[in-house]
Length: 66
Image 1 (tube, rainbow, N blue to C red):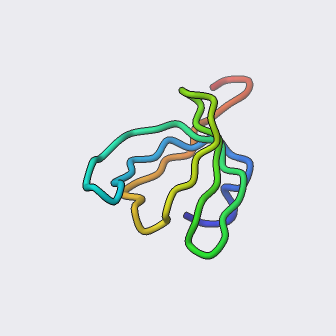
Image 2 (tube, rainbow, N blue to C red):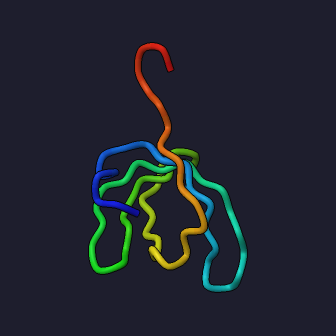
């Protein structure tokens, strides 16, 4: 995921180390050394994702006209 998404709301499709695939909405807090730190919008909890586990990502439009 490009660093330009820092602070953005992003919908991701993610495969964890056990092979389970999930779809999540996150707010990206930092991207460093292949790790993405973000707040999970559904649970409200901080989460860490490996960039290698990202299958897809899509920025979420926010604000007026979204």
